[in-house]
Length: 414
Image (cartoon, rainbow, N blue to C red; front, side, top):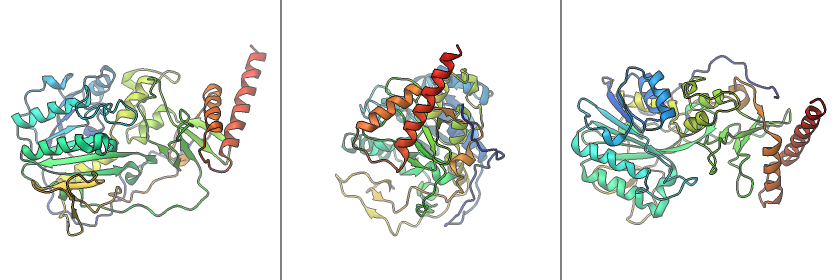
């Protein structure tokens, strides 16, 4: 295993907030329920901003094992279809399954066997009257099936009397070196969701100069894409299409190292403390369940920011927004107060969080990318028409030679 990890102390993942709209009055904490809770990314972020989790629902046994330890005093209902009582709950959060919506999934749409479970959320909204609803999913839901799934979802919310706003946000905006985009949709029957979700906008950062310390990519790709990320890792995934763990790889030009992050650093890339998913089992060589859980999770600082804004809303200025015409593609941010849909003039970067260099962020050594994985990637990449950063393929080939030499050395001493 090659070395090369950061030795910095635990980073404060709450970035220095640049507020462009001053908070109005700080409100009381909310009582919340988390549906499709996963490993509790939404709940941890909300609790860090002062809110209280009253109920959890999660059907995955490995995720349940994490929730049982990390939220030991919170009632856990395995099947969302068995949730029936939301009395006293102010906010319902649901990161409903994305398997039917993501480009890596089956793209069955909003009515797929997994993502169709969002209907259970709508059922609960018909039976109860929480102050807020928060939904989270992948950006592909905006374009899947010509946007019909998003049209169905927002139309049903409007029929139920909800004003709503949504926005694609990038995890890098919150001080984490992971290029991860997710849709957040906030809705309410009594409040203005724009004053929470849309008021902060730092705008995209200026392009950095050359000379980056590391590059993230997916070694499982190479034919049509890489998931290439500059001084960051690409979006952490639940696994490959074959159902095996699929951590991203990192290339460090200064040393020639090519390796994959430790699962504990993957947890930290999502804003969790290291070993947050340890209750799910696994070890250094077999962490498939933990990688899947981390890849499906919601980044904690994102919901910490949102939780803070729920207590301290601003006043949204919609003067730059425009009405979206029927049939137009869904924009990256939009809102409706019960009538027309408006395109929101905000970026995917609510905050300007200080983001550390990737290798400074890591606490644990990278794991050398295996000979088999390296050879497979190099074979695909060499035959593809993709353009690569100067020196990248040469570094991959050199890494393969080192791994093959290491294998022969071990064979000779066996």
